[in-house]
Image (cartoon, rainbow, N blue to C red; front, top):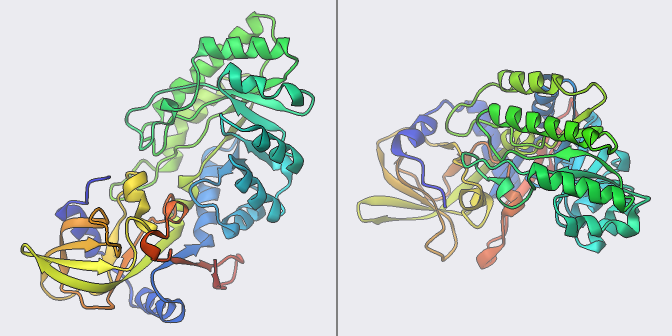
Length: 399
């Protein structure tokens, strides 16, 4: 579980300006739909997609559904011209129902059941990822239907999630996989990697790109078919309680490294968090309170087992703000609603004296929140209200 925000960190957000217009909108939304609530703003989805698309002008962006697999997100990005990164049959179903053309998808889970492969092929997805010979062998029955990417491992202890701990192979192993695929008449079209979620330094990408370039050259030197695709994964950082590098500056060295590849190599990426984290605001209400050991405990109707699941699974620190901001600030704890003592959102923080029904707002709540929420203790997950799904509208729909 992530450490609770410090008093200083929390106060810097708890005292930030919140406009009367925003307060009115939040209160009216809760009056209409109840609490807890997640407000998904599709205009922010558009803004983030366009920002990354501009920062990586020669890269085809495949949105990774994992952090926020919501139909409105898929529809919004489809209209923006995005492609999609799938990892499960459920995600295949989601994009199929939204009308995403199969040629705009790739399937990137390195470990698959035969049923997963068949479901994706039935939809029309043809590009898959492997990182070992056991996985490669699963494609023998489908050798005339598929194109594969071989995923390399680049460990990153600084990332939120070091995804190369669980997936990926070494350059030497990649060459063995590619040679074996040639012997089995399975087409390998390229390489892929993921340097880790919330990667703060672009040099991680640069090093991975250059290593992949070396592997591509080794493939040609061995007389194997040249590789035509490089998937640079996701991991592009967003600002939670600390500022990160602007995305344009972050991507400058990445673009430079990509320019060193042959012009025939197509570059794709799998952004997830960067597209959706900023797009969701959570609203929870105080359902009870108690004074314990000199601190005020406020029990919210959302918590670790709900929308704040990322505190457990994602190491995220969400900016929080109370609609009530006047009065004396007291040492406080924000707790979730369940009967489990681990269900605590933030400890040792300074808050104004709250009352039952007062609202607490969470920012940056789009990635790995509703996607990993549960109905533990029969506390229902927060409803999602979709805002601005039509580009010039403010239509609100229950999700």
